[in-house]
Length: 129
Image (cartoon, rainbow, N blue to C red; front, side, top):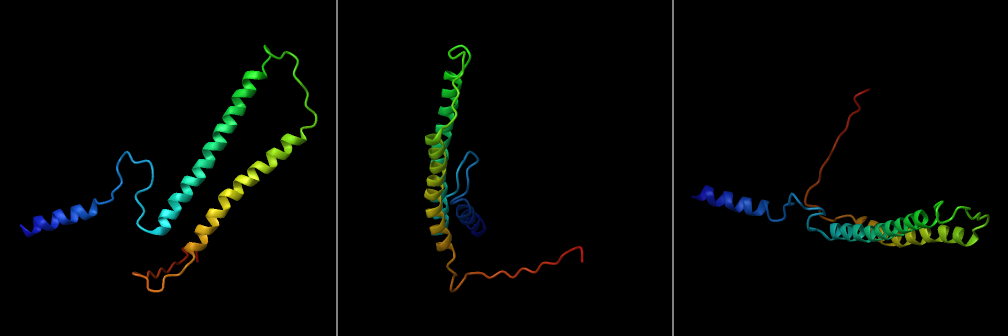
């Protein structure tokens, strides 16, 4: 009876936040650091989707408008200063929007715990001495 009760308690505790077989994301965060990592992942994924939609739209537009049937003599563009500036500034702004929260998370993770729950000492040896 006691053994059965202990098994049920252990099983309940072990499966409190277990990952499901169909789960696509991370498990629920247990610490504020993990919550920050998950939030940063979602922010970066938002920018990834924006870039994917923009590049896909440009590719479909180029394939639709610039084919031999609709445009038998292609237009020659020699200087595209505006598009060059946009193509340089836009990724820089996206990287800036990604860098600010990632550096904030990185510096918040740098704090050292005063009283850690466990300390692990690892010693490594090279096999090819």
